[in-house]
Length: 180
Image (cartoon, rainbow, N blue to C red; front, side, top):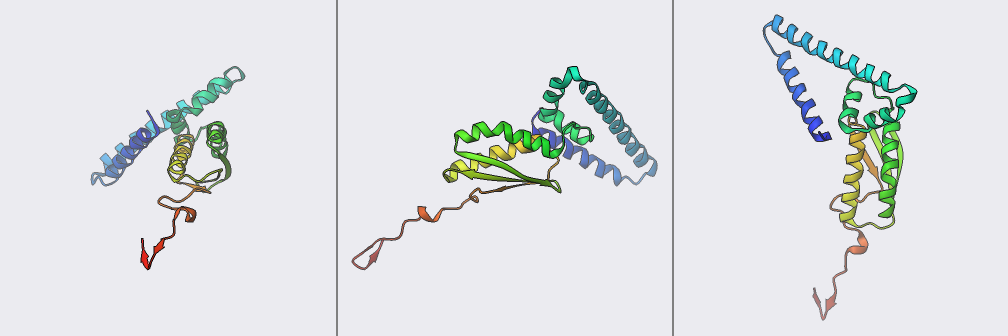
């Protein structure tokens, strides 16, 4: 399961909860809400226990691996038991991306992770518009996998989509009073 599939499941749950909240039968609405809360509590307790067990010194590598998995990361965040802070998860993902992007002449720096907004500064040795879009897409996908709870990713230093650098625009040439 990838991040977009995880998002689809959470959106489906939200739609069902909205439907439950509109039930006119108070008893049915209350029972459905209590059932959902009981399931969430049970899953949260299980996830918390899993993190506790894997946090023992012998299992540090295992905890790191499962916390880095996009699906499990999303569940750990959902239940508030992810062992790493939002900033640590994003910084870790940037460190993973760094060697690949350096080969493409790109450097990354985490500026901040405040109010569920991640700010990244990107510096590129060249500004190829098509490559910029691919680089930005790679960065955003990786960050969303590491931090599914964020609302926005601001990437500073990238050309906006559809932007044509001034040095790429050729002046019109004039021949005997005509403009080509």
